[in-house]
Length: 418
Image (cartoon, rainbow, N blue to C red; front, side, top):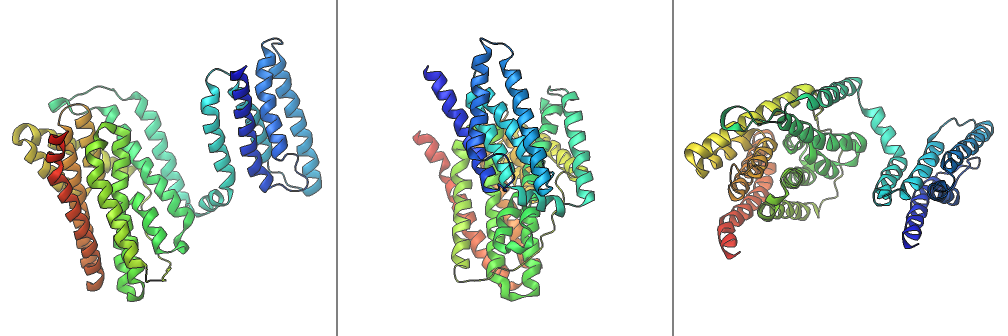
């Protein structure tokens, strides 16, 4: 009985969640609001239980609901001419989720699906905006990448081959898809918000795709007009700080055990950078439009380049560890960070996970790579921006780097104290 009550309550909650979103957008002629959606979810749940006695009841209930929805759709299109099917499809999904709640462990993940559905419904404006802003070339590149990724990936051997047995074709291509996916999430966000949201938001979203591209764009923007200096500095600092959180997310997915050591330096540098950026921005009221040119991360060329770079860094890191010890790996991290911090991050996370290097070595290497990458962006700020822009960026980056180095220097003491 307790299990039934719990499942019914979760089902009603799912119906209410989707129903509230639909109620907010409800037009006079539409057939369903919050109460109807709750009842449809409940119908799905109870139908499963009744089907234990009457085997075809679930099918009959579903057909009956489809008939009601079809009749409501016909009436609504007659009244206002709207031929959209979003609410009708949401209603059918609500019934299905209600049925899932009554089936086995379904009540545990049905709310997750309901949240995703509600988010898709609520983000209608932004999804349409993204669809209008994405170019045909970007769409074709994305489709080509997805086909190559998910057709080739299952066919690749999931075994270690080559020198030092560090190359796993399946794992390498999976990491390419993973990193491209993170970048694409930020790319979509940038497409949705557009340049009109200002430099500050540009920094946050752009940092998920390419913090280097953001700093480059901000340097050029300041070169055009010093009036946007503070906002441009903030956007650059936030984008660079977001890189540290992106690294932590990558490690969390690939090798969570590494987070214990890696979180203190990277999280501190990220928070410290954002805090300093906010301090600089506090006296500024600038909200200037600025277009940051970002390449589609689902394009095949950058994906193949990342894959090749990832393989090279994997090999160099393992070889350096074998022949030069930890110092060789650290040197590889510093050099790799100049080109791509994601590749060295994924490499260290995988090598550490497979016990090919220690967690401590991986932590130091990733931190040094992130610092190396930050120094590259500092150089860009000085070379492509104004002297004042470079100085302000330099003060913030120097503080971030100092804090990061201080933490990794004290890491051995912390480890020994454990």
